[in-house]
Image 1 (cartoon, rainbow, N blue to C red):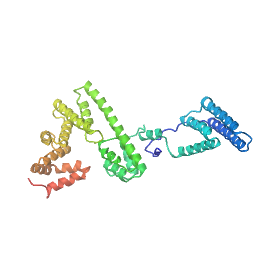
Image 2 (cartoon, helix red, strand yellow):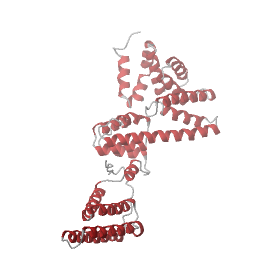
Image 3 (cartoon, one colour):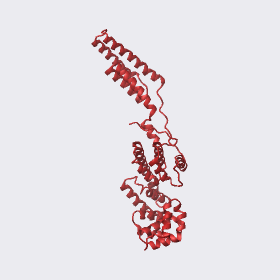
Image 4 (cartoon, helix red, strand yellow):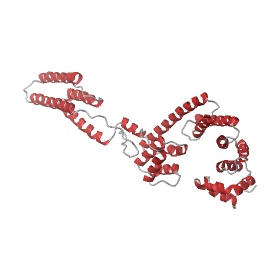
Length: 370
């Protein structure tokens, strides 16, 4: 199967390999034409009874031996394709005479046409992950604007829309950008690309996921080494915990590894809280993880204590509200929303309209009674 052609302003095309020299092509063409003429002479001489079949076979064998010597000792044009073409030329001539020479000519012509309509596997793979350095936000915004999919801050949703409804080239561009600037929010879109009807999109998505996993493992080993050298560095511990936290729920890694990431992140968050009991990012991160792993009572206890000294923090209250709902403490949830509903609407609600709808429902009618 031919490798897909990459052609996009978002993908830096690799440089084409240096073409064979003009003299090399002339050399091959001259030998090929001389061989064709000699083989035709032998054919017509044999057909006209000028040569006996045994004599013609002997002369044909001598010609093939000379071609083999030429191919092994004289023909030195660089490139695997050229060497294979010369080998094909010798074998085809030995087996089919002038028909083999004409078949080699046809093969060379078809190969030249094929090279104009596709790229090599190496170029295609290099095009998946170009080394172009560019501002992440600008590149994402530019891409989404070009495809008319940018809607406020809903970048992950826009990528999902492109992969669901875009053209083949738009899907390729989206996968390349998500791989280059991966964020956990992109994971559902990449997983969806694994089920795309087009085989090339599925291959690109699988390659991107493998690359993301490798980058995570490399980054994890780097951060682990840094923490081992400075075990009391709060900032470094937070980086370590956030790294494991970010990859704990992407569903891109193996299930056992994601479970290990969750437990590792919780352990690191707890270590940070021991060193710095009022560290807000660690408390919020641990509370969020506890909620998502079903340890709601512990999460509610930690978040409630934190609210006492960070009253009005939207993200903190959002996860505390989630705890109250899961625990069935509806009166406390309604009281929290009445006191701080505007903080939910003006904060997380701007990015997630469903939060606004939920707050309005709980402040009105239709909410569960205690």
